[in-house]
Image (cartoon, rainbow, N blue to C red; front, side):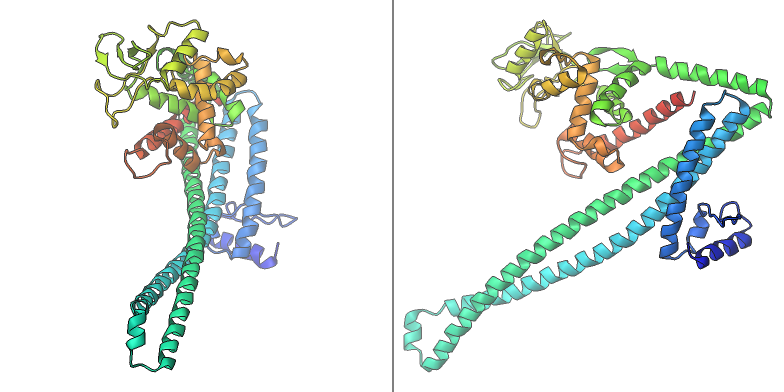
Length: 467
């Protein structure tokens, strides 16, 4: 590490009066992760060095949190844990800030390149338009007009040479536009990926900021309640355990299934996550969203395999084309048969209206995950394999199998990276078949609601881990 880098931190720390937040000199002149204010004064090379320091300190804090967490629950232990978690979150925010700033600079350069390429395309188009006009003018002359022309033969030949030149220029211009267009599209793709990465980092930074504030508030609350008294703190721990128990036993609503305790739902989601790498909170959020929408909740019964028509389960109201026949009716018959169910009394989701139209679509979703029969069959062997059962035993109405089916589908839709952008887009695709955009029908609302639910569920999961 260069001397100017360390000296600058030392001076800034003295001026700010916050040496504990800047770089601290010890016998070996080691440094700690700088504060956000200090980061603004660093050069690009110093920022890279600071990033390395921050990352090392974050790893050390993680080990310290793990070690402290194994000690017996006490006021001093938990205050120490909260202090470490607060410091860890602050360092994580600084790391994100460094990375985001670097990305923002790169995005600026890429954006400038794209603007230059776009201008080049416009220039080439203008040039091509002029060439095409001149080509049309020359091409308009007929052989008779050329023969009767009073122009010298040398001029006529010159025009023909010019025509050939123009043709070659048009070809060259078209080729250049094609190359420039491809380059621009590639640059835009790179830029979009970098913007997504920046959005992911900012989202993670916001999560870390909330955790810092929550830990700070928790620390102050504990200190205020206990005032350093261990007996009072042990009572506080008991209250936390009661809250944890309430979370575990709270009913997690599922479509076409009885509610199950949150702890059991988390168990299913965690199991499904192991084979798919999809975050448990996202799996739970999708299933919560599907249940909370209150639509297509398995209130129809299929009455005809030939037409796909059905009736309301409780009302007997006629619904035209509940399922698409034979695409879904045939697999539905096969699924129910091999699971010893009677398709005539097995509920599926109703369509949005009684009469069929191309804009209305079909119902026919099965169980908590609301897979239509033809889609379930596509995933059948993978679901059975992940669930550890025979292929023909995968059951859409079994909550454990439904969680796995949802996780596999989300994995295929790109949710495995765990980033905000990939998870949000996978939620939109789960709902509408395409990533989050402003096209019709709207799907962004679904992605946003799922991500909000995932954050709430993750908070509950984190709380249970800490009790």
